[in-house]
Image 1 (cartoon, rainbow, N blue to C red):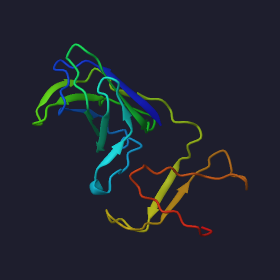
Image 2: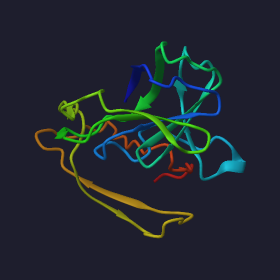
Image 3: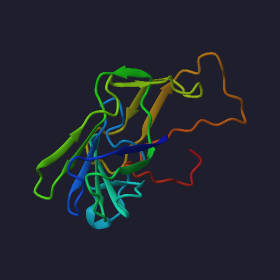
Image 4: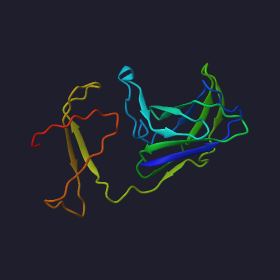
Length: 186
């Protein structure tokens, strides 16, 4: 996981009530990374940790590759806007022609500014760490969208290594999964 910092100027600036929409390529996780529900009253809204010096206090929500940023301070068109998204899951190794896009949207939903200069040639992802283990298959006990309880069975390849008796294997689920731990032996 990495922190992604965006520094840019908007031709229209930013007014309180506007939103900034950052769209990631589809090679990224749909919830971009470490997104989770924070408020019981908004159980279908996923928030992620983010910071900004220019916008002061900000809220960042995530929905299918789109991060929506709401700031507490106005920024003039001549000034730079900085946004840091925390704990973004880097995608697997590959090259995509899709670009990171940033847009400023006013309070009525009209796009005021649009920027695709963050990577004019698309996104190139470096090779994943050597410690990642290739998954052969993942089976689940239920394919229902809002299932209450699922059991996952992972089949994977250790390739050129084996596991010793004192080693363990960890599976990292995205934050939008509500995992319940049991105290049993399994």
